[in-house]
Amino acid sequence: MISTYEEALHYLYDNLPMFHRVGAAAIKKDLTNTLRLCEELGNPERKFRSIHVAGTNGKGSTCHMLASILQVSGYRTGLYTSPHLKNFTERIKVNGSEVSRTYVVDFINRIKPAIERIKPSFFEITVAMAFDYFAEQGVDIAVIETGLGGRLDSTNVITPLVSVITNISWDHKDILGDTLQCIASEKAGIIKHGVPVVISERQADLADVFISKAEEESSEIFFASDEYSARREVSGDMVVSNQTKDVMTLRDFPLKGSYQTRNLPGVIKTVDVLRSRFAISDEDLRRGLQDVVTNTGLKGRWQVLHASPTVICDTAHNEGGIREIVKQIHRHRFRRLFIILGMVKDKDVKQVLALMPKDAVYYFCEANIPRALAAEELQKEAADLGLVGEVVRDVNEAKRRALSVADKEDLIYIGGSTYVVAELEDL
Image (cartoon, rainbow, N blue to C red; front, side, top):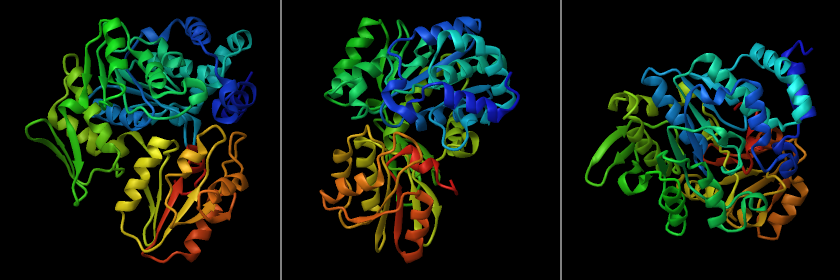
């Protein structure tokens, strides 16, 4: 019998294979375990309405924005995302409040015999826990983020009201396929029969993948970027437009990443689809977006940690995400640029490093997980591409080192891996 939250986490982390620690070895490439776990729990996934979100980049932000909008509209809203940054309980929330530690303990004790029989992964258990919690809490709707891919992702046992697929880029090629079309096809696996699907961004080479799958499933498909666009003004305001006029201005929008202009059209279009079932006013929509950080606790998206010098962190960790980050760095005004960088072993390290600014001072670090790429190896790979810096393994020590030499006009960027950002003390 597990009696404390710490014992429950120890059981989860030490006995179940975790992707963020060991990589692909933690993945079971079918839904059998999740289906068996759900059956043990009385099929909670059938007891609440849901939105299912997949994609390479932007799905976390999209989930948080949708959850905030529904919450502001008066609906009891579940939110399941991964990975967590600080605490395991961040993965499962209802109206912005994290699942209680007591619930985690009780759930593990209740399902432990089934865990011993089924031998699921860490992710499969957390998905089952989230579904059980949302059913027990009587949520009106839950926003569910896929972990990896879509077709074979553990979350793909739900039948949502609407499926959402954000930007597609290179990531997890060893698991999802070595072409963008293959990756898009895996993401398209969340499209269900007769369930409408919103594609946040029309990518010319990939549109047919989604159209074909939607036709196969008799699902209505919407390309949000065909109907909406978003732009950030110099003032910091975010302006959303349709094909003919501006339809919404978000004053000093709290999600500062320029890449949010690619996520917002998908969020707005998904709300359009939901309005046939949910009462969501334009003011609810605006307030939900405006207050997304307060309502959901979203962290690590172009988040400012310090001023003078400016210190910014972001969880972008693949080629597409880093490309957007570098664009935004170049739009920022600074005297000198310091970059604290850590990555994991199974990323396309060379492709990411090739995008990084050569005129920065680098500190190479590594997260405290087995998947982390050794800081010395990252330093060597970077040097081959003209990126020069020193090894400071701990991200917090690297941040202190950068702050000790930076002037108030300088910029310090911290990123390359979700797990590096997660270890920041002041996040």
